Amino acid sequence: MASVGTLLHQSHTKAAISPLSAETQTVNFQGFLNLCGILLFVTHFRLIIENLLKYGVLLRPPNPLLVLYDYRNWPCLSMVFVLQVFVLFAYFLEKRGKWLSSGMITALHIGNVGFVLVLPLFLSYKTTGDIISGGILLLITSITALKLVSFAHVATQVRHAKLSKDWKALPSKLQDTVTKYPASLPLRTFLYFLWAPTLCFQFEYPRSPKVRLGWLLRRIGELAVSLSLMIVLIQQYVFPLVLSTLPLLADPETSYWQLLERHLRIAIPSLYVWLLMFYALFHCWLNILAEIMCFADREFYLDWWNSLTFGEFWRLWNRPVHQWVTRHLYHPLRSYGLSVPAAGVIVFFVSAIGHEYVVSGALKIVSYWAFLAMMAQVPLVMVMELLKGALAGTQVGNVVFWVCFCMVGEPIAVLIYAQNVLNVVRS
Image (cartoon, rainbow, N blue to C red; front, side):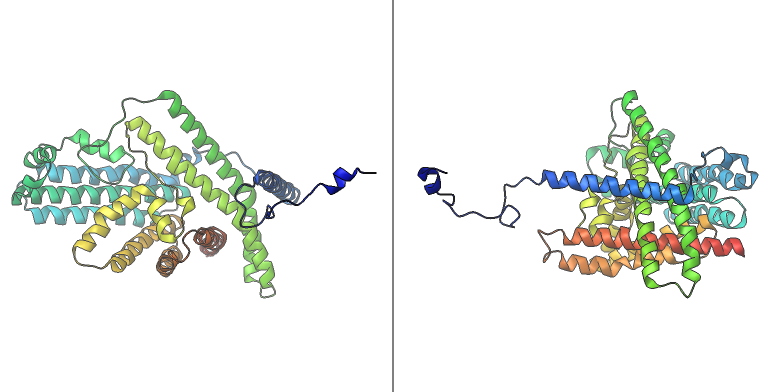
């Protein structure tokens, strides 16, 4: 029997709240995080087993040289080298075009960029090369065109400043560059810009002191692992899911619940492929290029994963393109008197055309889905910006971003373009 002292001991001596109450500030939830990690592992391990039981091993060792072996890809791959003729034309137009008027030089720059964009697109549609060669060509073409626009824009401003004496208001180093132009534009400066991981032309860039071989090899290893995982996910998970889903889309007997189930099944591997693509391109490849070129500004992305609005995402996700758009499109539009919303809509319009240019050109189809997907974000950006203040301090905006972008948008885009490609193949 318990002693009287034990029975009289007071168990309740102060006010207290339950550990899971919202008012709690000192409770450690690490155990729940561990449980979430275990559940995530078990769930995905079950999906791996299910996939293997249903489809077997679908992996085929990739051979990058197959793109070179197939003669049908040679025209697109050769066009990458032909583009360098237009690139050098832009340089020598500034370097040796003293006898031309400033307006004529600008017109020739515009025509040069037009040829750079049109010829590869025409070649991609007219040749029988595969998607990989067409995609490589049009991606390089887009990068080249953006670099040439930046170079021409800056060169035009320098010529104007030199003629109008506006250079006197510039810092001393830039004054010297402007007054000596085009002698202050050596070929090595132009070539460095072409290879540097940036789309914005400058006469000088912040430089790192040396190439760190160990650091570079680690990034190369991470790039290889990321690309390998992407190939595994695409071959083993995305392809069979998409190919088995397309007939359901054409079957009138298919219920909405079946379509929703397939949509969610495609969403997971496509999300992982997209995240790996981001890591491979923006973290590994651009850092590899920057290390080789001793390019010191490595801010190729910011914490886009914490975005509370779609507008924040596009400002943080792809910094090289964002810097180009801000410098060569948004600010000039604002200087012409356009409002912030109007300039923003035009920026999205140009970006939408660029996305459709690469995707439809590589797939050899005439489509508008990538364009519509980009433009559909304009009202979402405006609505979420209006609600940003009301949702401050919450994660609602971030959840909406992830759900709309990755759980809804990506699977729909994958299915639409897969169906378009299948229609082209059948025809």
